Length: 126
Image (cartoon, rainbow, N blue to C red):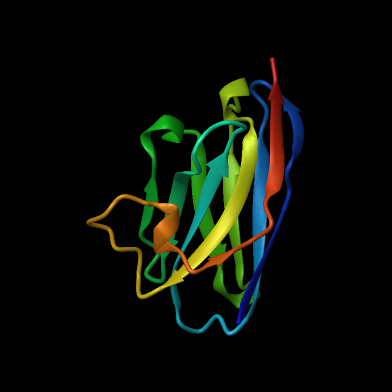
């Protein structure tokens, strides 16, 4: 059993920054890929970024250059640093984890992930 708890969301003006955190607990030893997703009202949940056990990262094009994913293995914590936030970034952000690696030959989709956090809301005003 794995539990994921996000934090760090909130309201920010356009151009601002937020750092989201995801604390993992339980049996995390075999989690080889962790990622962030977001979902805006009326839209599908979409991948934002992912990182594997070797530190390889992938960030989707629509946030490229503004988002950095990282992890602190000692703390079992995943981070998403978001800069230059825009209103279109407004969404519920979810932390997710999966076993077996990030499957880099495939796009980052929700179906790939085994565990999910409750989400943290990010609201960006203009």
